[in-house]
Image (cartoon, rainbow over all chains, first blue to last red; front, side, top):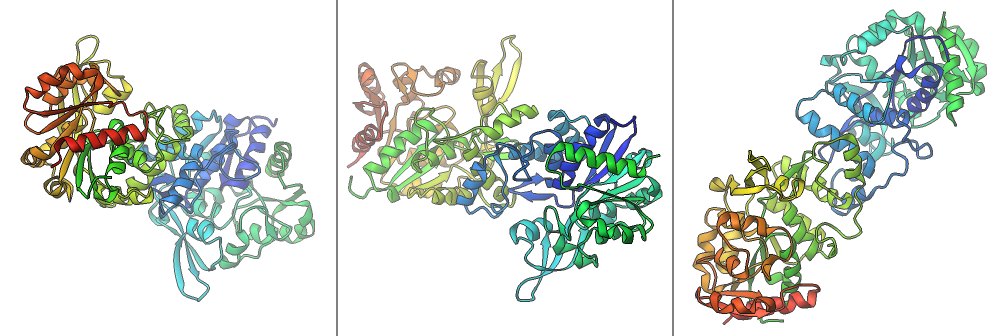
Length: 319
Length: 319
């Protein structure tokens, strides 16, 4: 384990979850703070669902389903199956029965005015998580996709509608973070960025996972001011996202779908960038951006791989 | 099957559900309207739970659990189990995963301003129910129990808190129907009472199941004006309730826990009263109240028993 360094990670969902399991093996978990995207939070059946917060929680809480990638292990989907029978408008979004408990716990607290960050603390505590998990903001920020359907008609879609319901099948014109302009970072976010010894941008979608976090006023500037301590791990391996459909979103914001394109998404924020062995050939061009580069196995099929990856990332920008 | 007679039944939960399965075998289900208690509706985890509406729906929709008495057959309780892990304040109320779907379907519609009666229609349709199910009111009416705890300290409890959480263990001083004073009968309720050929008070708790329905302004008067067509089935057999804990509530409103005491709960509303074989000896005293009396098997262990009971009840006041 590395000497006591305080690490703050910016995180989306699944890729981040896998990586963070390694990070808390590489450094003491109490020294890790995770700032998590809430731009894809969504109301389903009247409940407040926080997909990325919950993914990270389930991965770190050791109740994740590695095979499915999202949601909880030994999950069942009986309530959602029934809701489909009712023709409920949100039944296209598959919520597990165990997962529902998280949303049923969170939603009435939110309605009673308890901040999301405080609820997140209670949920993390219930799963015995020692790292500090912070939503990027307690305010409502919503990732919306300006898209074109098959007939070329414009669509204004919630990210989940674009991603899950329509399976990223529409042409993307633009990505917007509704509400980001007036959102405030959640308590502790700017401090965690300012006071960390090292900062990590997890291997998450740069556009819709890390992008919303950086869109919260003050966060991008805080990260940029710590640039020398910031390392990122490429979510793109061999020209395709390891998980998800980043290839549909990166071109819409002018990024090529490569480990180089993903590094460019973080222009001005990084000192180091970790890419997969398969992308070794891109290392010189990434160095040309002024970044240190590490090349290693980034396909996290097990916690030991994630741990080695986390060490490699931290060492790239440490000391 | 009896000749086309329109029947309107006033109903609570489990006892009513069992009886109604017989009633829709005795007369065509399309000719049956059921006015259902909503006084024990309750918010749990932010969801609107309607125990009696759902009990009747599940019984008539053939998805009931006869052994457990409440809830759905082949039910699981994974979400509620998890909520207990969270220490959620409402986790003492056991909601099944299939049952949750009903509440998750209903709650956002209610929040959007759709009346409970319209939602009830959609839920009944989903379960293929041909009888018309009506909540007693679309307004909020809440059964509250003024109680004394073991130390003699006064408690003001929601009915479910008294009944489920505290297992009817407190002394009951009074039963109140909060909001009943300004509630309006749901659309169709007064018409169903006024236009029915026969009316049935189901074998439900007279105090907290049928009581709230009669407390909605206009309902008691409407039933009273049809008195000659009204038959009730005693929920008390051999001096004890067949289900539930009516014995704790009837004395609080001055009723003895017998088939006679239950009949007295409906003073001025009944023409006929059906009691169990075991209560044969009470028949003369019930006749002294001016009621016709039928004595039969009222323990509905199967639909055929409920059907025979329904026939007996209807014939007692028919023609």
